[in-house]
Length: 220
Image 1 (spheres, one colour):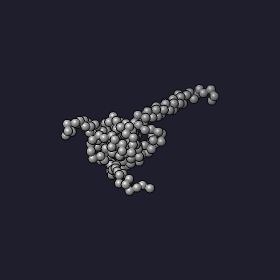
Image 2: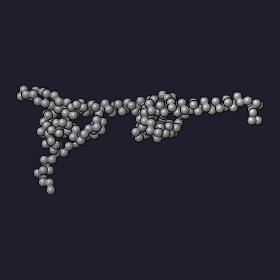
Image 3: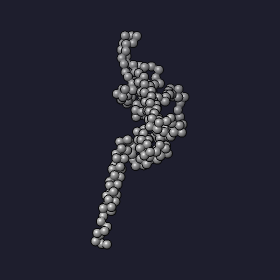
């Protein structure tokens, strides 16, 4: 049974959305995440590895190794400043993590806006709310933006602008394992080459029939 004294000493940490997004974005290890969480909850910017080790209940060497990894990734910074006693002390800053997450969110918003713009330019009209929802649905399901745009252009090439037709193209391509515009281009190129070969064979056979001298057929 845990004593009351120990409960009083336990420290509660707050995990923010920024840390959770950053953990996924930068593929942080558990110890890296814990060190960032500690720094984000720490009221002092003094770099005190012993206090960090004690608060996280982790070996000091493990904390230091994770902290150095975060330094290398540019998620934290460490500066030396002179204190009021004219002594140099090391101070930690995690301001970069907020900048990184903000930039990533701006990038995602920009990319989403870009795909809507491409659709409207290719179709020559404003998208309906239903069509916007369909595009968002493709993106949320994990379909790459470049694959969606390739499907749009393939539909227009075939003279069809129905979103149901575009959805069918995306479904067929993903079923074939195509994930990028480059893979799609190679697939379409090979398919059209095969069609040309088949058409040439048919044309050759038709020409042979037309050129055949039926009047002088020895088997007649």
